[in-house]
Structures are given as C-alpha cells and as structure tokens.
Length: 300
Length: 265
Image 1 (tube, each protein chain N blue to C red):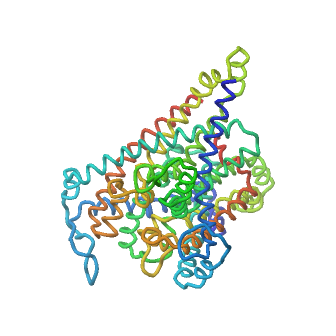
Image 2 (image 1 turned 90 degrees about the vertical axis):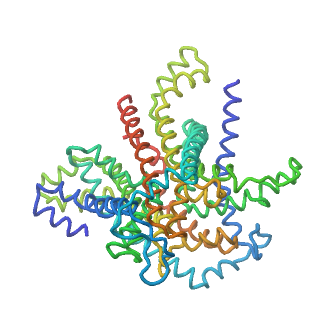
Image 3 (image 1 turned 180 degrees about the vertical axis):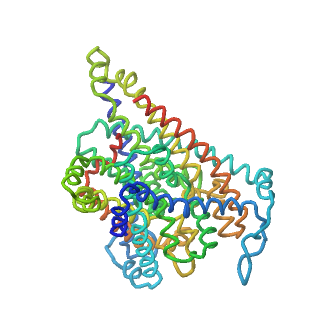
C-alpha cells in the first residue's frame, strides 16, 4: 500500500499533504462517524420486541421514528438509577485511581533509572494483558477461598472469609487496576517536567523536603491530577468488564446494560439509546478535558 | 526524619499497589499448570490443561481467528497511522490541534459504544461477520496509538537530513524510503506491536462483532469465566499473556521503555 501511495505522491507533488491525510479522514469518516450516525438513527427506532431469532426477525423496526426509548430511559427508575450509579462510580474510580497513581508516580519520579523502568513496566503490563486475564486473576486471588482470605484466616486476623468480590469493593478494585496505568503515565510525565532548580531553590532557602513537596511539587503537578481525575472518571463511566464480572446486578453500569439490551434482550433500539446517553456524558467530559489541557498547556 | 518515614510509608503502600497489579497475572499463569480438575495453585507441575487447550479445535479456531484479526488490524492501522504522523510532523496546516484531538477521539469512546455502532453499521453495509469487520473496530484504537508512537519518533528525526537528500536530487519517495523509513523503523515496529497487542486483548468490541463462525479468544473465554472457572481458562489466558509479554519485551528493547512516559513534547 505504501509503495503505490508513494508513487502517487511524486506525481502530484504539491498535493502530498492531502494524500497523507486522505486515508485517516476516509477511515474515520466511514468507520467511526458513520457507525455513530447509524446508532443515532436506531436509537429513535421502534423496538419490535421479537426474539431476534429465526427467519426475518429484526432487532428494531427499520424506518420508524419514535422518542419512546428516550422517554422510557428518563422516566424509568431502573435506567435513571443506573445512570446515577454510573456517574457515582466514575467519580469513585477517578478519586481512588488518581490518589493511588499519584503515590506510585511520585516514587517513579524520585527513583533511579532501573527502579523507574521496573515500576513503569509493572504499571503498563496489566494494561497490555487481557482484561479477562486480570479478572480471572482477581477472582482467584480475592475470591472467598482465594489467596488473600486463606492468608488472613491462617494468620487468625479474621475468623470468616471476607467477601471482597461481587460487591462495590471488587468492582472498584478491578476498574482501578484497568485505568491506573494511564493515570500514572500522565502524572509521571508532568512530575518530570517540573524544573529541578525550583526544588533546589526551595531547599536552599531552608524548606524541609516535606515543605518543598507541598509548596512546590504538589501545586505544580496539579494539572496532571486534574487530567488524571478526568481520564479515570471517563473510563470509569464507560466501565464494562469489571462491574459485569466482579459486581452484582445492583452494580451494573450503563455499558453493561448496553450489552444486556443488545446481546441478551435483542433490543437494539434501547441499547442504542443507552449508548447515546452514555456518549453524551463522555462528550461533556471530553470538552472539560480539552479545556483543562489547553489551560495546563498555556501555563507550562 | 519525618520525611524519611513518610517516604517508607509511601514505598510500602506502592509495593502493595504493584502486588495488586501483578499478582493476578502471576496467579493466572500458575493456575494453568495445575493437574487438578478445579482452579487451584499447583502442588505438582502439569501440562494437562495446555494439552487440552491445544487439542481442542474450538480453542485452536479462536486462536487462529484472533491472529487473523490482529494481522488485519496491523495492515489497516499502521499505514494510516504512519501517513498521518508524517503529515503532522512535516507539514503545517490549519486546525492541526483540533485534527489531532479528532484522531485521538476513538480512544476515549467506551468500547461498548464502538462495538454496538460498528455492529449496526457493518450489518448495514454487509461486512458484518468477517475478520475485517472486527479488525476495523480494533483499528479505531490501534491507529491513534500508532499515530502517537510515530509522531514522537518522527519528531526526533532531524529534518535537515531529509532536506539534504532532497537537495541532492532525491525524489520525495526516495527520501521517504531511503532516509526517513530507516530512521523511524523502530517506531513503526513498536506501533505494529501495539496494534497487535490491542487487537489480541480486546474483549468488548469483539463481543459485539463476533458471530458463531468467527470468535476471538477473549470472546470464547468470556462465558467460561462467568459461569465455570476451570483451569483451561487459565491456560488460554497464559497463552495470551506469553504472546503479549514476549512482544512487549521486544518493544522495550527496541525503544527505551522510559520514553513512553515522556510525552512532554
């Protein structure tokens, strides 16, 4: 592909830029924008209520327009409660992941080259392995008869196994592990961009290490904290595997409900509606994120 | 003194964090070597579940589906991401910052939405149920990653080398293949690995786009992990871990891993 691409480039010379950008524009237009348009359309379609199995059954009635799905979403306690929980869950993930990530990022920032590489690898690794592998490991380690419970029972700290999964703790644990790598990377990058001379100046002027941290490092790294909060919040809002596998029906998020509507109840219209409400939340967050990025970019 | 104690508390807490990050992965691998019928840490080493895994045509078929999808993802995302990165690092144009945000946008869209959107659209245009369909969805995540990696690699290449070659009469194509490409080969290689890893490990998009005929590994594992925990899932997971970690180590050797955290520019 590149070869024929290059051939065209030389012939047209001045339109090189256009040719370099054409593939990405086409790709995003066709496979990113169009699916969203289709989804939008279907979110206004009448649900046929069929099982979806067998000859000629559809997952929605083509060509129909209705607001019923959106009305149902915003009037049904089942959906509104779920939307509220999704937002609460996003906030919890944002706060927890950012706090834990900051501590780890700070150590990475202060460590020597070898330790730095080891810690970074430890953070990135879970991100590049399967969510399923992670969940499986969590089930084995934190389950009722898992390693943690066995250990705690053995030491006598507890008499009964702790319930650590299939509740809020389990879901937060899983989701935090999933989003943490991004948060750590963002915070490490900003910590490294802080001018060392500032810290030296603070310590030279007699500030203790702790004081230098709280008056120099922490304020200067706050933009990264905000970005991390938002990223984790955004991914938390879209959480799927963790609530599904490590939670219970009360802890399902909108993403899980999209899957249940589409793949189980075969109600594509409702699934699309939920997806759009979720998307609207993300777009608002994206806007805030880009504003923050611009602000922190202007400052540094 | 207090600062020192605080530092040790911090290190202790971080050890716990790293343990929680890594232990599940290690345990998945260990469990896969159990000879027992049920999920347990092995007392003796056994390859029983690997034999079952590699002997089962369903698992083998999903492994090959995963590979085909991953390779198609590379074929789609690497050229597009590379071309885009060249445009962004070698040309100035209007709306560059905004365009860069748009390119990154798919990374911020929940995979459930990409999955469902692609499902409805791919059915409408008739590519649903092919490897290509899943690869296209995976490319929505792989392409921006290739773009980031290539952009940072291209920025480090001295433009004056390219200009010198062009000044000596080399055509733009020749400059690309003889000067730029060798200099950014490591970036392209890492981008390729990322695309492969993303594709191999995606569950959610594949969950929507898989059919009875085409199922990637994670999709086959998914129902098993929900309803029955058998060690064969650990063996299947370990195969994915080994492939991923192996490729990551290669990637880390090709570039400096620390550079990944260094996206100041």
